[in-house]
Image (cartoon, rainbow, N blue to C red; front, side, top):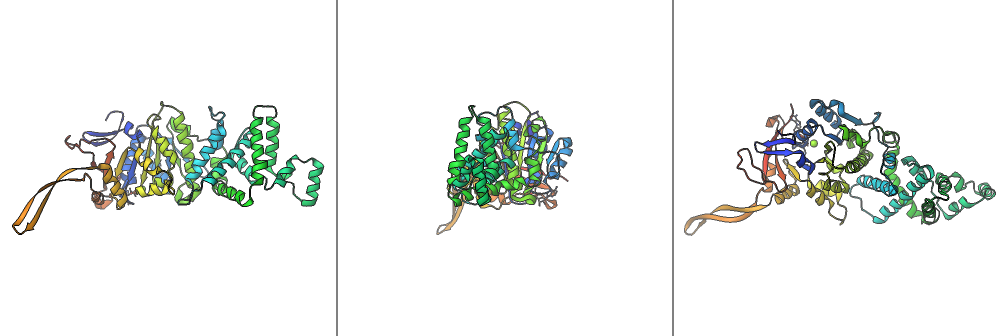
Length: 476
Ligand SMILES: Nc1ncnc2c1ncn2[C@@H]1O[C@H](COP(=O)(O)OP(=O)(O)O)[C@@H](O)[C@H]1O
Ligand SMILES: [Mg+2]
């Protein structure tokens, strides 16, 4: 095999690194052989070629599986586990804020990253309300800005304490401009002075001092107005809804082990994958639930942005998402559009196209799932009982004129002939008879492979079809 080849599918058909950059989707029912057959072969091919990579996990034994793949391909020492108690960690806000090249648009970028990640961690099926999204973004923007202006840095604990102690009424807000005797009088009568007990107020005061006379003072003014006027005057219910929406997503990240892994040190930035490390996010959704999921989505988003920034040079990298319905975001679609030039190979494994639709499309918004499905150029179809997935594949392969024999018994006896008809090239029913591995099948797993615009030659060189059925072998 030449250096760019990853899989030899037939004597005449190879699947190359360039093909891998164009994205891969492996579909198949539960137990159809996605993980142990086609997935395993692609994973090991990446490792053998020296790819760096990022692995998301849903099942508890996935990290062990990757450790084994890595050992079997001589890459054992390249595995970096992000897991409770490990030293590998990413303070994602600090990483984004301090990386070189981060400039004036920093706050906006940070809000963007958080929104993508928190969106990815959204309770599936919950209705989308753009008002909350906008207000949440506004609150985040101002909290990040005030943290940057007051302390020159930003962290999740800081943002959260600003949000938790923001003024709850115009009376609260007004205390910031009161002199000391007046504050003491309020303290004596009410027992509480917002300006003296609020982290938000302290950050505002510090930010004012820091930006006085500089070009940032106009930015400070904006942020000040937001907290002191707009926020303090919001209807109580509206305000607490916004805070609740945001906190339900952020607070999980502040608890162990997530706080230590994502808000303290940075020892495992995405950049280590460019040197050949394979970062395994061993926070499996089956064990850590929702927060495990959006913590992984967060790391993935930061990683994708880092991959895009590094330009068109460097070591190939891969993104691995088994049970991908837990991790897909609309950013995946954007990322895939430039993946070839950033030398990034993404592989998504999932049961059905329905899973992607449920994860990505809410209400009547744009059809993100179809766009993502469309951008992943190689599709591997394993045995599947999902009619929608099988119909999807049928449609993808198209129809062609076929001769169909017919025979009928009429008054004149048996008559018959041939009729030319447009029929599916690969009827949906084909996907129900593929082998699923296991000892009953001698560990053999079948799958159809489709690649947009590609005609497969087959072992004899004469196949010339847009479908190819291949067999994969499970490990002993
Ligand atoms: N190395 C192996 N040898 C034999 N059978 C296996 C092996 N690995 C998995 N299996 C079995 O093969 C089937 C396919 O497994 P798997 O690849 O995990 O399916 P999927 O990822 O599509 O859910 C399952 O019945 C599983 O128990
Ligand atoms: Mg699997």
